[in-house]
Image (cartoon, rainbow, N blue to C red; front, side, top):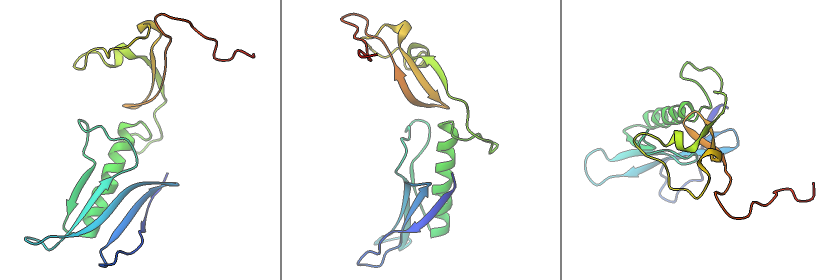
Length: 150
């Protein structure tokens, strides 16, 4: 989806305030902040809409100009979309989602997440590096039919 900026409602003190939209979603914001020392006006940007893993990328920053803040925010959104599998680094379309065992996804540095599920039936639906869904079956206890009337 195309990214588009729009002005947020004006503040009483007339600060610049911009929203970044990705389709119908607001995914970021730029707000002008006045500082008592140094550069008087600083434009603070943040990626607010999608989940951003802190160990993979940053979701906020500052810039000396509105144009530089817009560029920083757009760059963060593009990096997120590549990480999430929504687009590829070369600009190509989305990466096909895939199913992986939860224990395999969290192997290595993270170790297996503690779970009460049967590890052979605990699956994650991955889109790039983003976990978009999960299905699992309890290790013990009653297993109810999720569709009892069918």
